[in-house]
Length: 444
Image 1 (cartoon, rainbow, N blue to C red):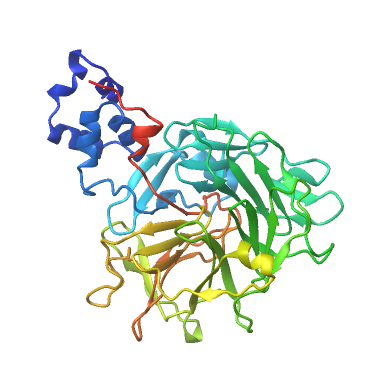
Image 2 (tube, rainbow, N blue to C red):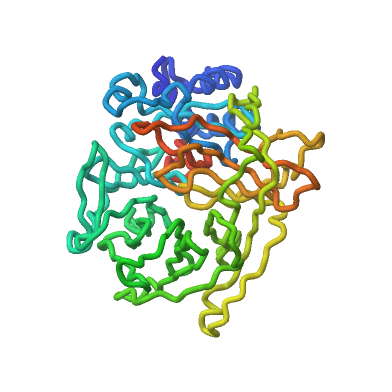
């Protein structure tokens, strides 16, 4: 069927000839992006699809965006690419509902590097760009300055190094502020996060390298970064120290340093996020390794709702702290305050810009103590921290107020091989309201 005919008035495509059941049937066979475009065809269609009440689409709840399991190859890059029939069709997986497909034709020969809202940062062998998931608007990004960094291709993958020394690894592109129509799509703000350096970009300008506090070769070991109230913040994986720079300073001088909230011998995975009101900086830390004595691996529990494989692990320490860095910077007194509850919210952290989802209608615990439903409030969800994913990837759900003996819920994904070609799974929140803004509704 030519679904585009539904968006035209008159003839066989007249909207009045379609009943609600017809629309449900059509939408059930469309991927998420085309469902949004269908909703943008008229107010009648928008109302029908938006009143679906989560039966099929589950709008406005974070989902996992990832390749279909059939395309998780442990093959050489060329062999795997040649064997894939649909390398631009991905899975969008609600945590407690059937997975949907999402067509991203702009991802052909590209890999995503980060996401925020309906925008994805992507790269091929030579170019970085921003692309809108629904409209496919493409914004090319400037190259990194040749005076600072060298870019080459090694084994069909981009490689980077300082011009004066060692190789550095791109972890992700942080989309701090998405481009908007009102800003002529030039009002975006981005961070290119490498393990040993950081570049910052405002739309219409050039990449600027943020100066490190320590000289070579004692570079920081960055693992996450965000922009908050005109300042860039980056956390060091080694000890949890957080550096921040004032982006209004054209020279981006040496950063302030915020000491870590905890100091011990434990190895943590560190994340940064803004508070729900966007005024405070939050730092989230979880134990970097989870497991069971004697290296026992819990059995996979197939989740019929969406085909994910779940596991139960013993509880791991998960902490959230916050502070107002700008007010304390003036006083020079950085004191983290522990956050013991996220109330009706949950945090979704990883390759994407942090998502703070309001899950008021969700429970914080399963009534029978099981792993499901997997989507819950007052939890921290962590996925891949960067495009250089771990050998044995796990996606964790950690309750900030667990009951005694409560286990950690884990989504277990296939391990990658040396030449795996898959994309790192990340959180993405499908939003039907894009039909009201980027895709203006047509009047009937």
